Length: 111
Length: 87
Image (tube, rainbow over all chains, first blue to last red; front, side, top):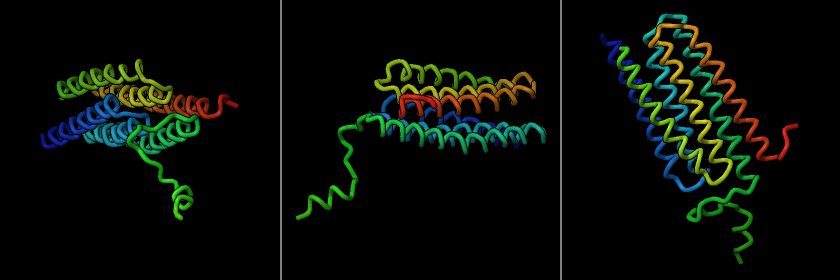
């Protein structure tokens, strides 16, 4: 009974984080901020939902689910990093409110 | 518990269709790749939920393989965006 309640809390917390990620994906202005939102939903949402399933199953099932969680936690930040790097190098513009943090250009501007 | 699994799977399906909006209207290729990446993660979780709903353990292996394929797809498309070729 306690296990069922804890598992339900984990599963619906995961659904909540997926919802937050989708809202960010639909409303944020450019690809970098959308990437920021969806990476949270990948790690926290999928991790919490699979953890909620893992405490329900037997030992073999829990082991497989933990394996999937570890794979997600390695693969999805790597994929997000690669997408961000590819977007930056292929010249996709940031949103107009963002500013450049390049140190060398600031030093050139100082008299 | 089956009701909770089913409700969570249906909510994830609705969120998947919302992601599909971004994949359709996304201004750049990178937006579409981000949306498809999220859809892949959601599909993987839905397969794990279906495995618990129907009581079939081998669906978890399908979920693991789907995660690997989605990762390779993202890496491939991102490399093609950056360099214009896959070699």
